[in-house]
Amino acid sequence: MKKQLGFTLIELMMVVMIAAVLAAVAVPTYTAYIARGKVAQVTGALSEAKVRMEQSFNSVRTYASAPGGLECAGDLFVPLFSDTAFSVTVSACSDTTFTITATGLSGKGMSGYTYTINHAGDKTSTTPAVTTPRNCWLQSKDHTSC
Image (cartoon, rainbow, N blue to C red):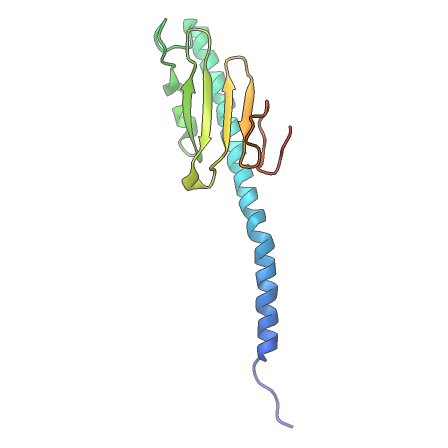
């Protein structure tokens, strides 16, 4: 009897099918893991930005870059967001109030994610799965409550 060399087509198809099933499970799990890391990075940066705004307020008694002005001292924390997958804006800025908003960049896979913090420490967030703002920071796309 002659010895068989190589693989049969059935054996090869079984290996391809097993690899496809593993990839179908692994890829979404990995992308969710990466997104959670990006969320943790931006929420940490938002917390640090609030602390820096408070430090500025304690020094000059206003959140605005000039007393009575509407522009916040955003240059205090812009470097915190340079390596994140989010763009940051400051709004509702006055002598006694501010709101910092981080919006996910679609080019970096964070479309639909928005996180905010204000002068009082109130936090809100939305994710692709939760479009109505929640009064906390949702840590992943799958979370619907805090």
